[in-house]
Image (cartoon, rainbow, N blue to C red; front, top):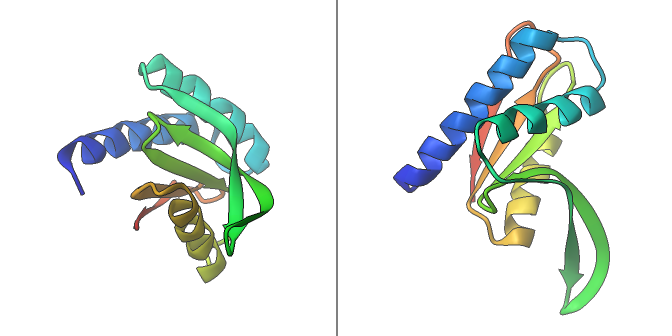
Length: 122
């Protein structure tokens, strides 16, 4: 992974930790989806929330999906508030990376006492 993406993911993780420390665990995912962009914007990062991406099969558009957050057009951030990550969460982020041709995603779980982070590289 290029150094600039390591620095960028570091800033995103810092912001997520700050949000988690302030709000704590226990809220619905939508609360963190609203709070994290506020923090990332304060850091001067460019964010897109609920970014629509088209999904194709055999050259035909078959649907649209919305990404939680895309930062600086380079990193997908998928937020969860679940007991534990499972394989479907990882598969989801990998599918998003493939659909967008991006290289890096962050899977963040706000439901625990300590923020759980999984860096996903395509």
